[in-house]
Picture 1 (tube, rainbow over the protein chains, first blue to last red):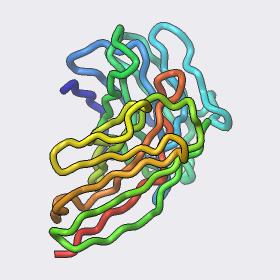
Picture 2: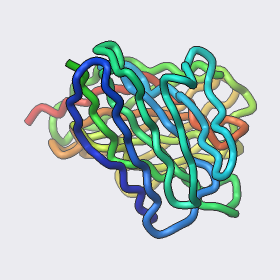
Picture 3: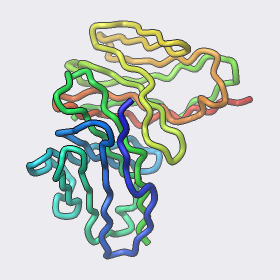
Picture 4: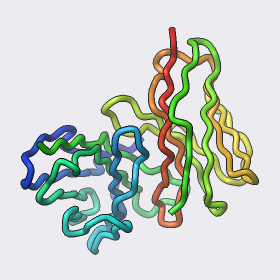
Length: 118
Length: 110
């Protein structure tokens, strides 16, 4: 199956710093990628839809100035958590859909990034 | 968005069948999915079902869909210790995004 690589898998950062997470589709192109966030014992929550060449679409309640998304190419989307605070500590996971495929095509997920802000 | 709900925990003995249940609210959902998440790992697609089907079987996995009641279940036959994980059901939204349940932590007792 198609592979989505997410990097880093774990990161610890100091409060007030910024962290960049990369989501890369390795063997297919993805016009659309999605970023999810998962708190312990809770479901994955969609944060934003990342569109190649245009601005991301954020879900209600997600601060676009805090969670910067860049989808500069058909194989790479990045999520930057700016001025991180301990409450941003979470598991972030991306998914990608191959471009030009039908609606029933599956989303392929990265392995996730566990962010800890100290 | 839509609400997708699951019970949080399930324990079964090795060799027994596991049944994980899920309810959803959006009657226009076209595809419903089951994912498996092992500790620290991403999501692995187990199976999916199209909304006009009521059952799908794939080796040890059986998915049942009751569209009228908006109820989805995943049955794992002959559950093994390697099946211990968190299982998420998900419903496909209009923009290809997925709405996830809270996940059910399956513990298999040897």
